[in-house]
Image (tube, rainbow, N blue to C red):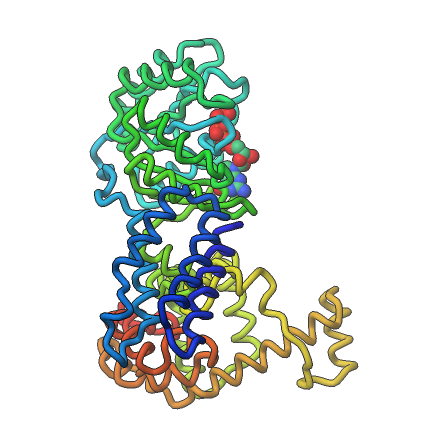
Length: 473
Ligand SMILES: Nc1nc2c(ncn2[C@@H]2O[C@H](COP(=O)(O)OP(=O)(O)OP(=O)(O)O)[C@@H](O)[C@H]2O)c(=O)[nH]1
């Protein structure tokens, strides 16, 4: 079961429970059993799941809940807290500081995605103005150095390695030395991976660690590892001081629950996840937004960050002006879709919205049917011209109609002048939002009451500004 499915199963279990007229012991037990089953199917370690179930039961005491309390809310919150507890070891990992040299060593089994992840990690920091460097201390796999060299060259990141030298410790020490002298502030050491946990791998890893004295050891784990994750992560932790975890291939069809187990085994946080083979398919991992997304509760801040990333600042006021005039054209839709495509997989982005899970919004979900907007011959012409089937043109138009309807409800939204955030706060109230949201989504949030508290949680309407194209940042 992939993580998106896990989220879907948990959300369904909670939804089913809330459909019950009375939430009694039996309804709660059924719900918890469904959640337990989903977690086990996702390869979360049995012991962790049992503990979680027991904890929820001890927190949620139905008898104690006064009438009128939203029991579903309380149970959902308990599930949320417990999942966060599994994923949050309680202490943050060492965080390198820009401008101050840090050595970060990567460990993991062969094929886990270690070498790829080293480059992604370097590239991520380089984009933020760091001076990273890569050292290939993998002398076991022929081709490892070439792979690192190729990736590093592509990303214009300095690298160090050797075709001749067979001692990984020597290479690691030389590389770290050189890059310290070159004032690099993030020196990343890639170590050998083997097919399975073997004594020689651990001994070599230990020696590299002893010689280079890394500030942080990152354990890279393939999300498809399954139930073996706990033992594997623990074995690594026992040999070197693992301080953080990166889970790779979260984009695949693998069961992802092993990630939760790895955190428990290493008592170290997941700091990033790999979501593809490309250099920038790499995301910072935050426990609360992640669990929130998993449970279909949304992640506004992540969503807004994405929007801010992709809607060019200079286009934002103009867009807001057009929308406020109720002027939602096909061109606007086209431009916004172009922006959305830059945001990454659609499902991933929509899963940041409350009421959606990645499962509910698979790729291509923007399709729907029954268009009446243009006549047939015009649609045929467009289809021919664009080399797409007529069906797709029809679906695109149907989607346009749906969005246009939503945006027409935003007509009259007052545009704040620079610095006038409060004006928008007043305009963009829960009433407005409730008209825009699909009814199913509104229900999932908890109706008007839920929406109001969600908007409060968002702090201010400031983030919403980005979404609708404005902002006085
Ligand atoms: N889909 C997907 N593929 C990934 C991801 N991360 C790595 N890969 C792929 O996984 C394969 C193995 O990655 P490597 O980086 O070579 O693995 P490694 O752990 O360094 O292997 P060794 O050096 O032999 O220990 C490659 O084909 C990568 O492109 C990811 O997040 N998503």
